[in-house]
Image 1 (cartoon, rainbow, N blue to C red):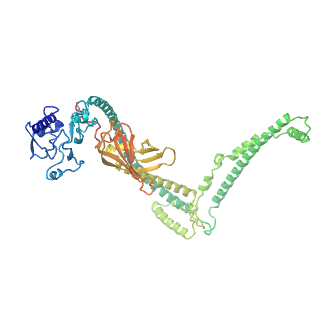
Image 2: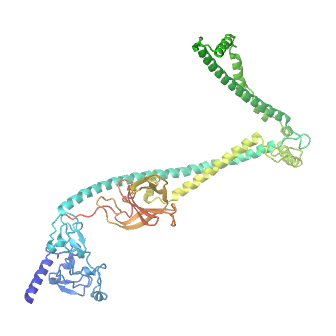
Image 3: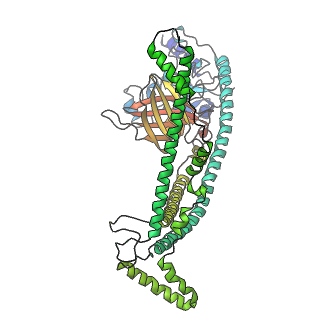
Length: 564
């Protein structure tokens, strides 16, 4: 009986050892074939001190602590860290008991070779997603026979892979366009910085000139002499001219208002006359109503009277009077600004003096003027006895020009700081997100529409109306590691390092933190939102596709290696 059992054991071992080709046992990939070349003996891969005979390979008994003697069975599947502990764990504490092989190798002829976990070997389930040739179920446990579907699956996969590659090619071309656009926008900022530097130099010079002009105008306007005491009125002619100008403007405005009222009343009168004329023509004279008859006779008497002719000449005169004074040849500014001050007369005689004496005299006269103003002999026109500002039009105009120059300089300096800060910002590889800044994409999920704007804001919008919720404002770019399975359509993150936009400081949650969103970017032909989830309260994660990250550093190309 024992000899019969031993015979069956050896026969099973021979079947299990049978290789998919002449050089490898079942379940061994080409990468590990070198460890199984010896036809007589086998050395455990992670424990070279342990030697076995080749008959012990795939004999459904785990002899090597690392499981390398069972590449084609599930005998050593308990070595997985996810498996329950066994008494053999005490032995593994003294040797290297980590799995030496990644799994059972499926050749998948016509598709992509892959590994399946050892726990899946002969478990009675066809794992076509990983092992399309069905080779992991060679034992036909429970009568299960997994047919080879690699031809069909591989054909469909290659069709999708071709579409993915085409999409990836288009995405790469779009990325190049974005890089070119980003470079153009950056050059615009650099050119603007240079022009701002030149503008600021000119504006600083202009501000200096306008401030000097203001100081000179103020000096000149302060030089008006007051006849008598400080409280006496200065510049009587100028005051008279100002009053005359004000009175003329008031009369012109009143004339225009009265004329408009006259024209309006004239129109109403014409409408009333038409109404009464119609009434006279259409009333019934046989109708015995004395009131109506009296009204008709009164209208006939009124209509028979001579009407005043329209006075076109008067209207022409009114048109001329209504014009602005400047159109009629009266320039008030000449009377207001050309008034010769006593200081001008005082300075006029210096034109006859030598230049050295003129300079000395000018200095002394300025000192004298300042002294006279402080003692009330000359009028300080910048203020009145009530302390309110009474600056002249010349001073106000000069001050306005100086303020405008100062504002222009301030705005240019702000622009300079803003553009300098913009050049220092992180816009990602090749400055590419500069070209996407402000562009938005959205997707519907449940009762909401979710929108993300590159380097902007993420927003939740109710479909049924209502206020929008700010899910975070852009703060910075980061690089994060992901380990996701790539979907068949290629619209996923895959595994590796990815670029992410951090959006923080959104609308606060009820009894919670302010909303924040991490937008992880993957390669795609178009800008599109793939997925959105709430990882924890008010902390969201979006997966977004964009050509901006295709072929970027850390971006693993889509697709895999085929073995046909």
